[in-house]
Structures are given as structure tokens and as C-alpha cells.
Image 1 (tube, rainbow, N blue to C red):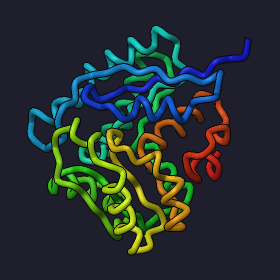
Image 2: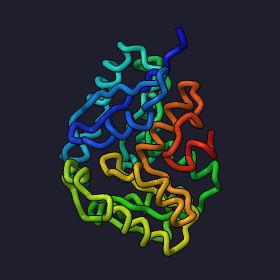
Image 3: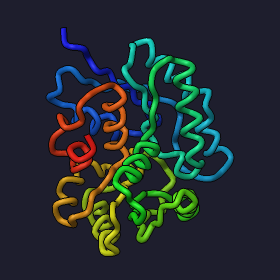
Length: 242
């Protein structure tokens, strides 16, 4: 029997996008499958209550349950370290690996790895978040040496509402950011339906576009020993950084 690649995805409880999009990316790869574990996330804000949603304990519990199914890799398929700071994800990966013995990654650390591999210093950012969350994300990227030359955000905080942003709104935001000619554009939210638009928008703008659901799948495949070039039709990421 061909060795199966089992990709574990830690999922915000109110997210309805990352599961179907991840499964669509992997459709046709008979030896690769995604498996999802949820924990409570309902709003994205900087309040004490909202930040407490990302305490490690429930995330680690969800990771441990995924480990019972012998995952090849476990990924935090979310963007919280954008406003919490990238060290939060580094620490989470260490704790998941200590708890489960399974290699771990996150959407945001994967995005940053891609930026570094492609020598992206000037980027554009598209999110659904509020002003203060967006400002925190921009500050963390600036501290890491990444210059955001254009950004758009929608001022939303209810996590479920992100999934209801229509395709034309996402297209408009990406096009407006693209006018600044960044080296790359990040669609930064795993409950925003950006990944299905990436190929179309890359062809239109001529700019690499990295959606954080896509970065989660890309890095998980690599950790599991898979060939990302097998994922066709979802943008340049899977072909150029195999």
C-alpha cells in the first residue's frame, strides 16, 4: 500500500472556509488527506477575552486528538501570530511536537518562510480585520523586516462573518493593493475565501499571491514528505517553491 500523507489541521471553531478549500486542494491525490480538529475561536480582537482564545491548552488538546489518527504533520491553520507575535507560533509548534511527537507548522510561519525564500521585503496585505488588529499585524511584520507597501482590511471582528465576504470584494482588495506593485500579496485569514482566486489574480496582476490556507497546505505537505507540485491550479506557490 502506498504510504498515506495525513495532514492534521487545527481549525477555529467558527471557520467554514479552510476545511472545504483544503480538501479541494488535495482532491485527486489519493494518498493525501486532511483531517481537522477544532477549538473555540469566535472573534478576532485585541480584548483580553478574544486573546485568551489562543491559549495553548485547548489547541494542544485538539492536537493530541489528531495525533491519535497518526498524522504525518499537524498545522495551526490560523493567523493569530500576526497580532500575537510570531514567537507565539514558534512556541506552539514546539509544544505540539513535544506533546505528540509529530512535526508541526502554522500558516503564518509558512508565509514568513515563503517571504524569506522569495526574498520578499515589500508586500501587500489583505485581511478582514479591524483597524487595531491590522495595525498590530503591520507592526509585527515591520519589526521582522518586512515592509507593507499597501493594505486593505474590512473592519470585521466576528470570525464567522469573514467566510461571507464575497469573491468580488476580495478581488477588489487584491487589485487595489496590487497598484503599489509589491513583490507579493498575502491574503491573511484562513476563513476568507481567497485561495480559489489566487491563480486568476496572479495571472491578472503578475504578482505572487500567498493565501494563508494555501501556505498551511504547502508547509504541511513539505513536512509530511510530499511533493507540492502535485497540487495543480492553486497558484504559483505550489510549483515554484516545491
